[in-house]
Structures are given as structure tokens and as C-alpha cells.
Length: 168
Image: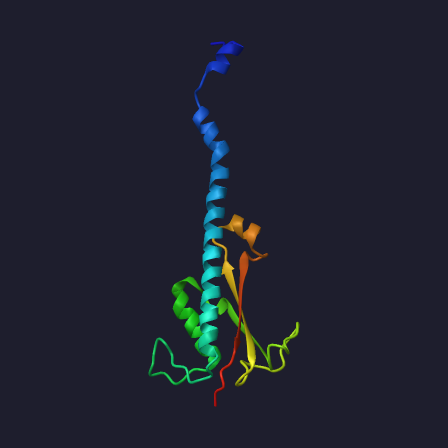
């Protein structure tokens, strides 16, 4: 059977599959991009909130108890902050990918770019910047190439400034 040019253009067989093949990759890209950006924004916002809360709790310099096991011996300030952040995030965050860097200064007026005036979480009355960094493993490989580094990790950072209370 021989078709003329007009008959070929009138045939509609297979049009839906061709349209799907053109539109589906774009739709799936937009869907995965929206999902990844939503998750990253959620983690970023939650991390900022939790770091602020943890900083307020950390400025007291007191004895900290383990939130999971109160009978556990008192925790250091760093252990407490990691424990607090872990309890707020639950299984969403791999704590091995979390780093906390405290940068203490003697006063607000003494803050300079590039580092603090001492080590650790500061002493009584010192100003401390808590810098928290978390590596989020991007879920979809394609978005890992767009958002992440060579290994598909997207680094989320949060920072808060507190002044330690006068503690003994």
C-alpha cells in the first residue's frame, strides 16, 4: 500500500508516545529539581534554627546531660551540641557529616575576620561564633551533578553568634 504525502500527515498513530518522549524528561527534571531544592531548603532552615537553639543552650557552660540517656555521665559542650542537633533532626541527618567549629572572641568589638582570640567554646563572657557545616548527599544523581560537588554532596552551612554567660 502506497501513501501519498497528505495521507501520511493526517495519520495520528503514535503521536501520544512522541509527545510523551519529548515532555517526560523535562517533567522528571523539574520534579526532581523541585524535590531536591525543597529538601535542601528544609534542612537549611531547620539547621539554622537548631544551631541558634543549641548556641543559646551552649552559652551557659554548665553540665550537660545526654538527651537519650540521662543516667549517662555529663557531656562536654561539643558532645551536647551534636547530641542536641541529632535529636532535633533524627534520622534525616548523618551525624558523621556534621562539623561544628566554634570561634571564640574576647568581645564583640574585638571580632576580626579570619579567626578568634582563643580555642574551644570560649570561657565566661566571651563571644563565640558557632559555625556548623553539614554535607547533604543529593538524592538524584543528575541533581548531584547540578547542586553538589564531585561526590554529589551539597554543603549546608549555619552560623550563630552568642555571648557566653558568666559561669564558674
